[in-house]
Length: 55
Image (tube, rainbow, N blue to C red; front, side):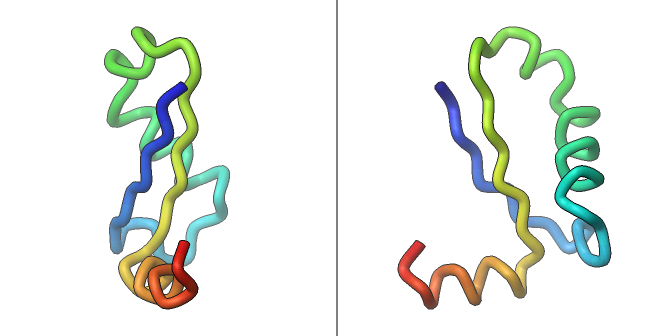
């Protein structure tokens, strides 16, 4: 199981599904070799807020 935290300003205004699709498209070949994959996608602002919550 691999879990990745991905932070990008490109996620602004996008739903969780749209964010996941962007990541999956960019990493299509790499993801194909992984059995279990979870991506947590945040904008830089969302990530700063999460870090403040000790996540």
